[in-house]
Every structure is written in C-alpha cells, then in structure tokens.
Length: 100
Image (cartoon, rainbow, N blue to C red; front, top):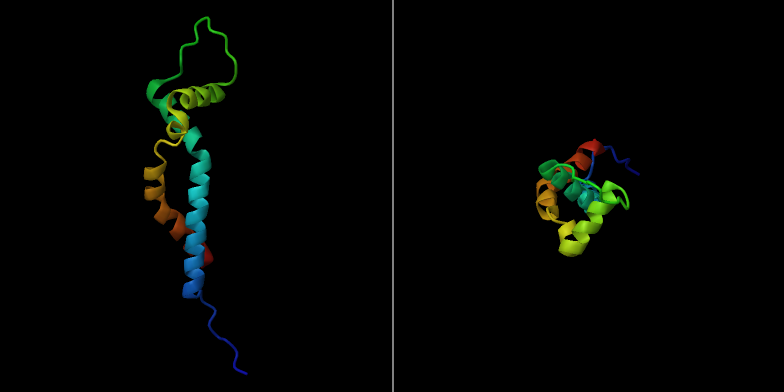
C-alpha cells in the first residue's frame, strides 16, 4: 500500500471552498442589505427632523416601515446586485486563502 504524500489542497477542495465563501457572502449581504439601504440614506439625507411628531419606534424600524410602504420589498434590496457583483470574487478568494 502506497501512502499519499500530497498534503496540498486538491482542485476540488479549492473549488468547494470558493463556492462556500461566495455563497456565504451572498447570504450575508442579502440579510444585511435593508440595513445598508437605511445607513446609506441616513448618510445622504441626514437624520429626519422630528418636530412635534410622536415617535412610534426606533429610527431603524421607522425607516424600514417607510421604505417598505413607499417602495415595497424591492426598495429594501436596492443596491444588492452591485454589492454582490463587486464582492463575490473577494468572498471566494478569501475562503481559498484561509484553506492554506
């Protein structure tokens, strides 16, 4: 019986790790996207002026409700495609590097 002396990663292992890293990145970006939309809008427009209005909930929840009512589910995921396209190679390569 001949022992396997190669200890390096196999091409199949590298591809599996790249796919796992890319999939994990897409899932994470999908969950975080509505919060990223709120963050970006607050950065662009600033904090809303409340005046004498009654505050029903937190700033985040109020913004999520506002976006969902005005723009629907599509508005909550605005910008997801460019994020995934830009970061997908990064997520895949980072998993390959972690394998070594």
